Length: 85
Image 1 (cartoon, rainbow, N blue to C red):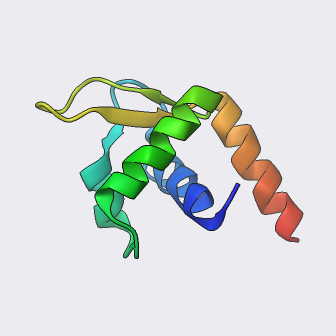
Image 2 (cartoon, helix red, strand yellow):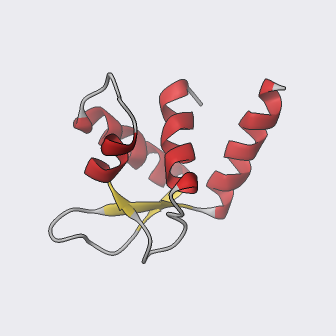
Image 3 (tube, rainbow, N blue to C red):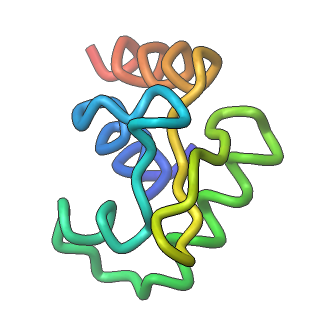
């Protein structure tokens, strides 16, 4: 897990994006933090997390895909937070 991944998972968790109904679009995630990365980079990281089971797709927001943090993603996020202390 790198810093970008940690931030993405943290944003999803802090905003209550933990189900298909409360999922966030990439643009909403980008709006939460001043990223030095392009939207496409964020999307690629989220898709990587989706393949790893850390996030899942929610209901579409218009034409945009949305994503939420899974229980496995929450566990990984907590493990990373605890490793800091």
